[in-house]
Image 1 (cartoon, rainbow, N blue to C red):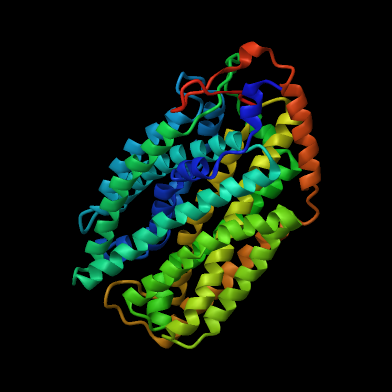
Image 2 (spheres, rainbow, N blue to C red; image 1 turned 30 degrees about the horizontal axis):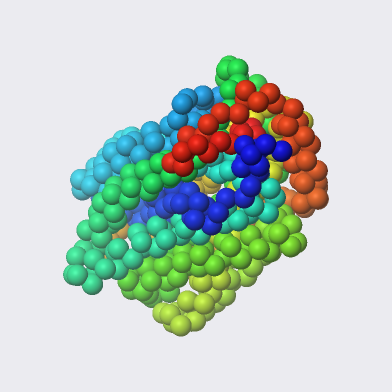
Length: 471
């Protein structure tokens, strides 16, 4: 085996994994803020009320078809900088502009204003997330190594999510308003996005290969959707994401109006929930490498549902009881996401072996689309349910016992149902660690036949390092 090929197959060092995982810092932070803070901010402070739910639903009809197209184009991108690196670099300025316009929105802004800048923000998030996930799949090729790298990405991304939850707590202690706290979150995101993306793109090598350019074809998308494992994947991704997204959309309403927590205490519990991902992500990766990824996914789904029941039944305004349950729920939720992302890469290898095509970008585009659909639909449906039960989300509004009870039932039932369905999607799944090892051996044997002209110098900060693109 040549030195180049050995470099391609060698696992990344811990420092290299952590450097690359920084790309998840701005994404996880913004994703958490959009799920928890932005709907509440626009409903209460900006003054859109429950109309926010309709905007989030409409944006998905416009935005979701973009992800498969971006995935197709990324898979066929060939530049001196790499295949995915340029797309991640493009995502930074798009994201920064949209964040400024969203978090500095004027009071009384229209639904059209929210629709426009939410669309642009989701475009920036898509560029970042699709490029990061597909790039990670080319860096980690083994069944176990993928669990580690996606676990690191999820775990490190947790730090960004924690930061945006701590910021409103700090601003509240400084006697600033809740709206000013959210605006401070926006500025934090604007600064963090370019810094982390610059670190990743400058310090992480990306394998390159000379190949013939191929035309983007929508038939590639249709063929993927005909595969049973792909259907399992996108269904599981939708329902696994839908559960926590449903909970997030109702979180501040539930913990403040039903559980009796202050805004600072509610944010404190959410910090605990998110911080648990630092343990939950690597712990689930460890579990998956012992019982298989799809079984680990089922464990996280059941455990998450049980913790939601504990939270629902716990005494009101009792931080000491709520905190452990929130910690376990957050750890299990993070573990579920790690498993979905790692399973996606494994299924991508299966497709590449059988069809001879690199479609990992398109595959992640599918899961990105279902993830965003679940997140937006959760806001739309939860706000619709709140309107049915008569709950008023406006600042200083008074809700009666019936409205609070409706809020409680919506908060508890929705996430449990969705997450359990998501875990059940992989019943009967056959792509085990052993089968994936066979797939990798066949792919490696086929790759070994490539002409040495396919080996090119990697775009890397380390001069002279050469690797093979196994895509």
